Length: 116
Image (cartoon, rainbow, N blue to C red; front, side, top):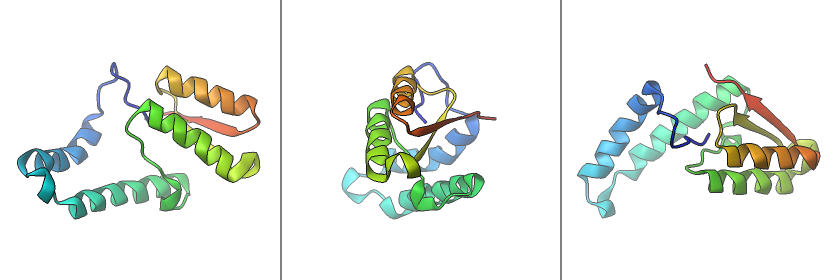
């Protein structure tokens, strides 16, 4: 889900991200504790997958609209319209929503998820 520049970060998300951000800011880039950050990311992927009745390897987090669009079309091409179901949040950046509309017009399944 793309955090559009006008969308504030949910405080719960920020709480989970802060330890990794502080670690990155405090440590020289060559010695960043990537294992800890990877563990945090994997835990988030597992929790998300559990809530969606999916496998953690099916969950892909992206950092920007351009990367998300690439992922959406890449997954659609790889799995075809019968298998690929792309989930996006209802508050996505307009570029993501336009890409999702394009995928839908091509016969792919795109579901908008409402966030609580």
